[in-house]
Image (tube, rainbow, N blue to C red; front, side, top):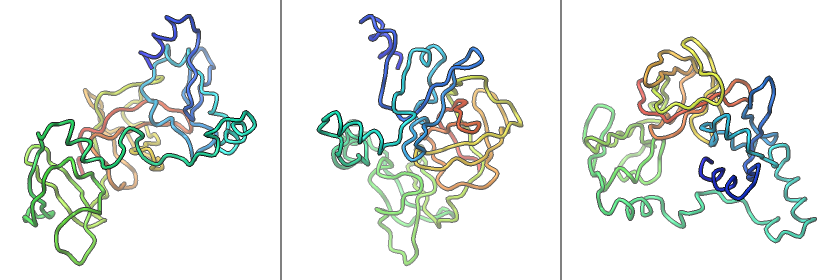
Length: 248
């Protein structure tokens, strides 16, 4: 947004409008980033890093509309893509995620073993970029029970697999924090969303330093380093950062 706004200002524009499903509300001399009216399309999770200055020049015209209403507007305007099916994946990754990553790291893959929760080696793998926490498919080890990836160690290359129950964790650290409004404090309880398609759940601020430590009231599945953790008070985005470590 910083780069887009810089370009927009250079062109003489006062505002930048995008198609994100989110809302900006201006009240009490501050800008608030809010969830979209259409909760099934809400994209505020991706926008937690926006500053007050950026929000002052941003418009989200779709934020007060449902997708059905947007499509109808498109049909009436004769827009050819008004009935185009929704995209489900990342638009610039045409086929396989792991192939996309592998080409860009130019063979610098981190290989290792597939291990169980006790450390027993169950097999080997060709690179940690082929796995994500919570993954079930593609784990090539003989077993009669469903197995899920519950930890990836980039130092050793070991990928730990186990039961679905083992995916549930509560405490985690968040780095590179950004605040839309006032930062949260130790003891605060906020709704915390850890993936774009996950429902938020209440978590408490345990420690604050260079990172912030959070603890979910109810253990959550698939807390994953590298994903964003975004904090909400009701429908308002407070801020967020990148999950750096899962504690327990």
